[in-house]
Length: 239
Image (cartoon, rainbow, N blue to C red):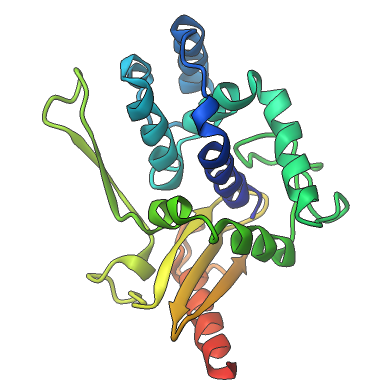
């Protein structure tokens, strides 16, 4: 939950505030990325900082969603707010503006890495996702199955591929009404998946938090995806 929603909020905030990004201090971000790349889980290359402004913004957004890049999340924080600390404050202010109490959702970092004061709940996750779904750019990002990056280091491109079975028509758990979603796996909180589905002009949000470990693999999302599909089907039957 905390890791997933940190990524979702990061995406919607950069979509809303992104036009004000200041990418002039390239040296600062270069150092930041190297530090992040060495110290935390990372799937994104530090050298994307040499790319044009619009390209970088897009890369970070899709990198957060598809690759779950913690370096992308921390770069977004600095790009939007000037520091990670200030960005965390912005995240907390954002959820409070949605009527969410700090007693049920509170952030201390931008990646969702475990912290006793970094927490959320299913109801708040649904509230945040419902708000974000009003933004068409957000919908486009969470629905993306593949994103290809080109750079000096990747002249032929490298492709990030979504691991979300619900939007992959080649997977057994493909669910056609699914719009998209975001997963997370901080070890203390367990797996989570927040998804959205649309059918007959109705949009449903499904939240699966820490489902049972069916296959002995703590990073297996089978149960999370299955639970979410059950929630969608139940919801659509009721309305």
